[in-house]
Length: 63
Image (cartoon, rainbow, N blue to C red; front, side, top):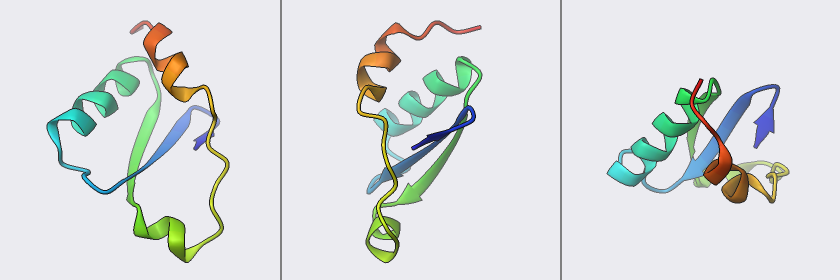
């Protein structure tokens, strides 16, 4: 979910090397990143996730 330069990632493996690298890449582009467990999606209404986030990530350049 992206809200005003903030990204909330829902993941089952928040401490995996891949997730940490993904998070650092987003932070290097000036975005704030927060991790939430997947179970949080089951407790509340699912947020709208930008469908192009993965395509966009590939084109982001660090500041």
